[in-house]
Length: 233
Image (cartoon, rainbow, N blue to C red; front, top):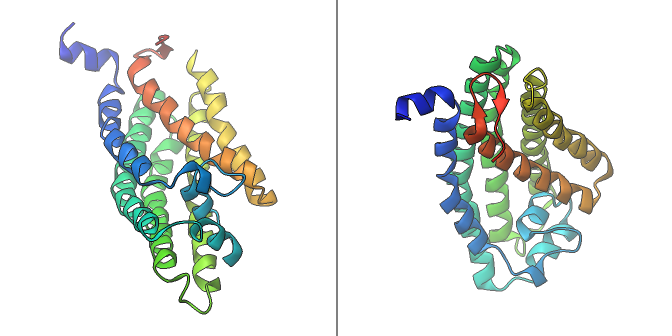
């Protein structure tokens, strides 16, 4: 099969190839993450606990156990995350653009613009995280920074949930793809419950569901065939 025929039969594959560029950034982020024994209870990663911190006690719970070098690694992680957010934002934008061409679902044309909004919210979230790691022991009042962190964090995560829910709903008329569509709606449901309850385990599950959704649409880029059928990997 020629490359042109491959791209014709699998119209999402170019977007999937772009997704491979995220892998070295994921590896770098993991390498800068604190050890598991320093992760706050209820979370699977310190950076997720840091992002969802809603008061000074929770910020200190994340940062106080870390050494000076580990605090610097958190900063390095957040700097790498600027590249990561740009790449996942572009991937999400292109995926929704191409899916709109495939399905004809018009809402995807507008929903794809959630991607740059998500990246902006993520960038502003990171700026608050960097501010906190540098000054949380020196700043007399962390409340304003934490309030901004809360706003930008939940804007980012809930918009991601909405974006995946729209992608999922757009797949409901696509033969076997509809089953993936049902799964992609779940993160928004989990996110709404997490926002209301502020339960750590549910917040952690929400974050995990977003990462899983990214992985699923990444795989989908390679298994989707023209005509709405999905082959089994």
